[in-house]
Figure 1 (spheres, one colour):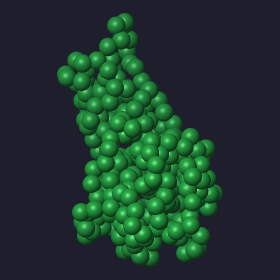
Figure 2 (cartoon, helix red, strand yellow):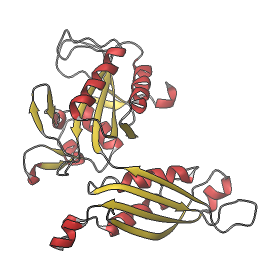
Figure 3 (tube, helix red, strand yellow):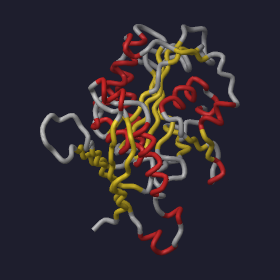
Figure 4 (cartoon, helix red, strand yellow):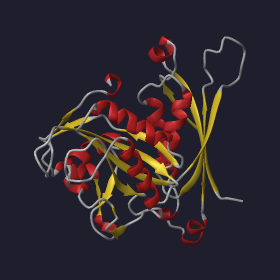
Amino acid sequence: MADRIVLQGVSARGNHGVLDFEKRDGQTFVVDVTMVCDLEPAGRTDALAATVNYADVAADVVARITGPSFDLIERLAEVIADDVLRHDLVDRVEVVVHKPEAPVGQPFTDVQVRVERDNAAHVVIALGTNLGDRGQTLVDAVASLTALPGLTVTSVSDIVATDPVGGPEQPEYLNAVVVARSILYPHDLLAELHRIEADHGRTREIRWGARTLDLDLIQYGQPGGHREVVSDDPALTLPHPRARERAFVLVPWSDADPQATLRVDPGADGIRPVADLLADLDRSGVRPGPRWEQQ
C-alpha cells in the first residue's frame, strides 16, 4: 500500500460560484487533500526535508479558497491539485472540495467535487513567433500542446511583445510561456515540440532568424527535485543555457508561475528564483502583448 498524508477539513470563506450573490457574499468551502508519497525516508531520518510540509499545503489551500473567484468548484479543485503537485515528493493527489452552502434548491447535506491527479516532471516551454498571424499561431500552438498525449498544461502566461535579440534585422516577436507536467521523456517531448513547429511551417536556415513558431524546452523537472534532468547534450541542453539572460522568457514565465525557480549552476546553491533573475535584467524590450481572447 502506498504511503499517504491526509489533510482533512481545511476551511475558509471564498467567493466561488456562478451566481452573483455567491461572488458578492461568499460562503464556506471545505477542502480535503490526500497526498500519495514515499514516507519511508522521512520515517527513517526524522527530517522535514524528506516529507511534505502539510502546513505549507494548508496555507496554499486557504490562499486558493480566499483568492480570486472561480465560477466552478471543479476549477478550484484543479488549481489546488496543481499547487500540491508542485511538491516533487508527491506522486499523486486527491482533492475534495466541499460546498456545504451551495444553492441547490433542495434539502441536502453536502456538495463535493473530487479530482485525482498524478504528478510528473514539471516542464517549462517558451513560445515565440514573428511571422504570419502571430497571435493565432500562439493560440494554435497552445491548443497543440494541450492536446499532446503525455503533457498536461497547468498554466499559460499572458502574451508579451518583444524586440528581437540577436540575428538579422526582423519583425517584433510575440512570446508566451506554458508550464506543464510531462510523462514524456525529454528527447521525446523535444521531438513533439519540433513536430508542432514544423506543422506551423517552421524552418531553420538562419540561426536566430525570423520564424513562424519557436518552441523551446526551458526546463525539465523542478530544480533540485528527483525528476529534474540536467543535460549538456548539444541536441538538448537542460536547463536552457540562455534562459537566465532572456527577459522575453523570464517575464512571461514569472507571470505563468510566480514561484518558479531555475538552475543556473550545479549544486543546491545554483538554484535561483526566476523573479530574482528577472530583477537583474533589462526589460525595456518586453511589452504587454495582445490578450488571448482578442485572437
